[in-house]
Image 1: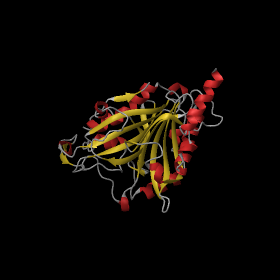
Image 2: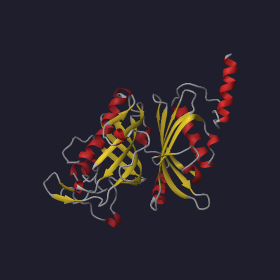
Image 3: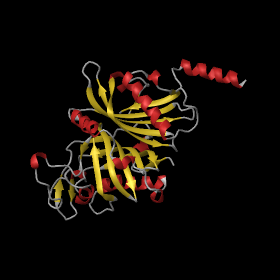
Length: 342
């Protein structure tokens, strides 16, 4: 009877276009298994052939916040993989978040950046796919930077010493202080930045960056807009990020306890209203930020060790103001509470 049921199930999966991964077995995945599934997904995407990956019949897929059938969206235009890839494997949730470079366009391929989240069932089939594709005229330089770098920064791949490891919830709590600190951004918060904290956004340095054309380093105490030349702490303590009016739909989607790495997807709103007019910590009145409402859809990865943020890396793309992810109900999509499955 059991053999007959397995045969029927296999037939149904085949009719649904689901191709099991050979030799992968069943049950929760370890790091190698999770990254292997992510690699297979990326290969299938580059080939524009969903049959080269293993999807559950009920798989849900979103592309830049829009729910689509698997095989639509970026599946139509992807043309090749890039050489930079950064996996964050969560063996508790059976999930993996990957930041990577890709090429788009069959006739004239152009470089793009992508963040993708996959979740698997115990049959090691993909049940959820959420991807953010960042495009634009500056993407060629961003991709070149990451591909020249070759691999993720060493701290992301380094195991945290066993004595310093903390719970998944504690890692998320520290990472969330970044979002909360930026959203409030009065320059007076408790900011958990290590001295070596550095941040890349779409491949570019947005902290500790060299000045363009030997431009002098602005003084955080007198500047009227924040600078990518400043440290993580200086940017927050300046209070000049106040125009980020809300950081919402904060979903913590992959936590690697061994390495102290947290991956989150969220939205950064710029309301272009009252948030543009604010007072710096030393009392100066400043007007700064976008003059029209819009939102960043963002995937952000944090390295947390000894309660401090050491490395930050993000993939982000501009989205309509107030847009949701397609994974949260409207109430949760518009709140700044932590969403985390322990």
